[in-house]
Length: 219
Ligand code: 5GP
Image (tube, rainbow, N blue to C red; front, side, top):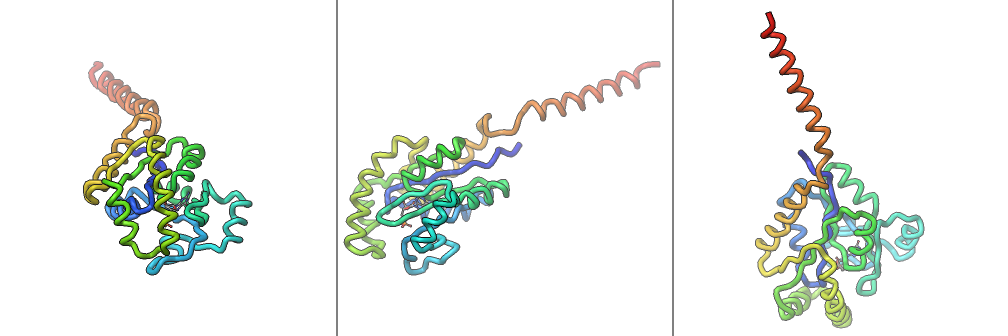
């Protein structure tokens, strides 16, 4: 019995390590696909358009907002980010769960748009680790870094809105925990197709079998 595909929302403060977790999980699970977001921020070195993000000029992003193309969008750290409805529908149309690596504002909108979404908040093991990870990234200007650190505080306070909280103390352990959450959600009764239909098929076969048995017994 295959569960209906559902969105898996991963959020974390910047530097929480969620993108690394998302990448590891996607490599491990073929039944989970990724929704490539749109953003107005400039690509970091090594990032590829259409793979990491769809990098858009602000005007084009806003046109897409006006056309209602986004399932959710938000302004994060001074740039705009959004999830295209068609990205989510494409992955779920392939029968796979769709992972959304999005911020806390976007997560709230996704829960409204897709009430069956599973929400997971990734927390760093300590504030020191969070700061060290952000500084270690070296891709941000000092100003952008300070903004991300300030935002981390309000993002952490949102953790209580999520269904699941995973501490990213060790990558393999955090990935295994997210995998377990997806597996447990997949067998929830309300995510499975109507059991009644399957039971009806089995009952019909049993009745046929009984009828054959009875008729083979009769003289
Ligand atoms: P970064 O610039 O480091 O790639 O991402 C910054 C933040 O924007 C992260 O918290 C990331 O999860 C979030 N983000 C990425 N894509 C989206 C999106 O489509 N929608 C929203 N709301 N946030 C996003």
